[in-house]
Length: 542
Ligand code: NAD
Image (cartoon, rainbow, N blue to C red; front, side, top):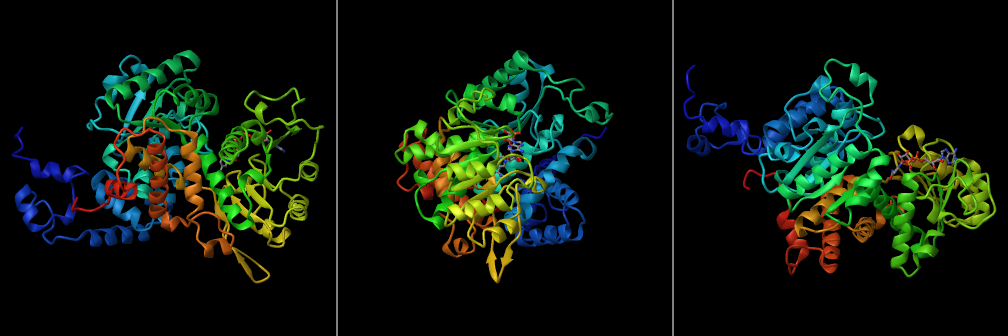
């Protein structure tokens, strides 16, 4: 075989981090040895972006757009980020939810360039060896999944890898965490998904999920290896089933820099909604009483963060938890019920049993109701009218996803409350017009929280991730909602302004990290400037 001649230029073109594609100038082409390997006329980054946007416009279907962007990411990273950062509100749903869900489901049938690290349990005892195959030494941010609870789609096995990849793209695009410090990881302990196990193209281990001790020992090996190799990194757990997510977070949260976005980011965005709503209704968080429809992990996670935020306003934690009351499939969660799980117990109140949600509203007189039941239509006309009788401006948050499971629609709430309700939902609803008045519903989307949290941790090299950091993040999201948005009922910042919003949240969280002595770098005079200087920009000049 003919040995290749000096191939440096060719290698530069094949490396997504060094490749500028047609944007290499004539001088660069000559100096780097890529002259002749490209069409002769150089493009600017702006022209390259226009070319990709044009191509995306031509293509039908979001999955096809996802594939174009995914190929671009593997070819020219700066161009990839320039494209998605040119219009984040449009491209976030393509590189992440909902499109990424379909990409994960079809992972084995659309697989292209490999990205990230796969850790199969068959490599038990050699995790460090596999992780050290990653070509970057200074990894700061790891998003890891075991693929068991991917979005609302369940166990997708090794196909879950789309989630850490997509989520890390948002850390970069929405808050500027540099892509070179990010590492997507998928832990493959098997799958219970029969379709995957029967699919000859399935790329993961063809075995049932390993559970319990063996599972946790493997997670432990991963954490130790990651700490050894990347001591300055933060581990973000993503889309684990509750049975593992909660114990994993409990095990590591006080030991290393780590968090779970499904649990903590989700609670923070709900709390941000509360702070946003209070800017419309007036009053303090500590004066509110919330009644949750649903008492699962979402309800208790949000309730706990709200309670902790109330503690910062002067209540003690037990008093605060009595203001975040749960109602589940068996009725009001009261102390004398014998079917209460330990994680629900702190929120159980002394009260006679109540079997219907409306009765609970009448008796407890909440200022806000939060739907996390996964059951559609439970916030019916009587519920909304009762809340509106009791409150000048009732807070109504149907947070169940997807849209088909929402406890009510935006239109129903505005109509039944005669425009009085302050509304936010888990799934998106379009603007609503009632008797000539326009209302813009907000969507509680973690994307306002996790990229900013990542940026703050990266900039400060935080040693731990605390609940207070999430409370500050929630406050920082809410304080950015402009008066003109509030006037239309919108209590979250618009997604089109996500980068500015995230940099603000990152600054506020970083301040907290420095204040609490959790940073590993000295506090700069100007934290905003530090964050800005560290934020990635998709430019060929850097
Ligand atoms: P889960 O299954 O753990 O809990 C569901 C709870 O609802 C249970 O306590 C159950 O008893 C209760 N429930 C079921 N039917 C009921 C009924 N008829 N009346 C009263 N209560 C009933 O689910 P989860 O993980 O807590 O998630 C709940 C929902 O919240 C999901 O749809 C999820 O997508 C959504 N969620 C949204 C956000 C957001 O910010 N948008 C955040 C977290 C969760």
